[in-house]
Length: 139
Image (cartoon, rainbow, N blue to C red):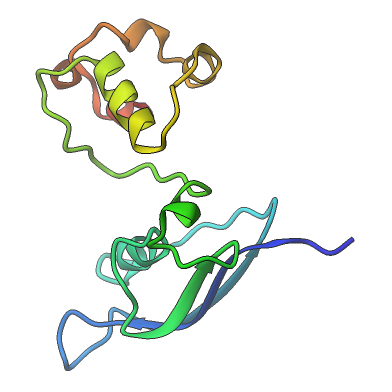
């Protein structure tokens, strides 16, 4: 059985300054069902690489594909889930409102099965500003 490539990064480089690359010729092939962890010291380029994979930045050199698609396209982003370190949602909105907003970005409704799978039922009426860091990341 041939496994499907879900992420292909080929010689990806990104620099914040002309003198040094944060990501320098990073290559990775991730097959469906595989799990990887990016480990390294602060400033090693882990977050930068993930922002390239998520299509939030464009590599200066090399290429990245999500299921054969450019990561900056809506089609690719529909296949990608990202849990950021922190969210920028206003502290005065309720969790239910955040979920509705995020669902609308993908043209879908957040259903009860997903809410239950993520154990968010008790958080729905709460304000984002009153959540712990772990609760915010789950949302």
